[in-house]
Length: 267
Image (cartoon, rainbow, N blue to C red; front, side, top):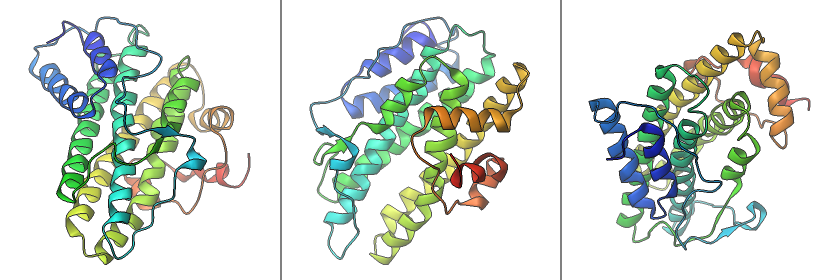
């Protein structure tokens, strides 16, 4: 096992095989919890994470929209798209560990993002296993690279990273997942629906983690969190936030409507 947490994070980031990446993420999290890895250390993350040859990565507007119909193809497309999101989420969690390891952050910050990295890996493996049960595999369908673009535009600014990744992108997952669960249940696929419910419930804690550290760091810099969030999202996120919002799940994360509702109606 790698000597420091930052070095381990980089090892995860450069791993190209998706299942190997997810398993290394889980192993690293277990080693951190057990004390096998003790030092945060320092290491330079790659500009782009390791990726397999498949799936091909296309511009977002060239990836077909997924619709759940009577057959299995729509469900496979949905689960494949979600697996791609979770794979990117593994890298986003470990990138924040490695990229901001020199910022003098408290150990609790790294504890929290190790948990997120572990969860995202568990989600990817859950979806990968479900795809296999449906006769498919991650890599069978095209995907897009939009999620990693968010990391590149916020690589220089931790507050911007927290504003855009957990507090826009992951929060959006809270909004759309319940409808996906409903469609899977209507398609008589309770096993896939149960997997998405697990992911949704874990993502509440991830949004809470992002919100908690965003507020901590904003206040440490003498900034009011809500207007700071508005300014950063307007600068680093393309487009408006899309209602309807899943207010009950956002509330569970402590993510107040004052953060996001104004951004749905003005830019």
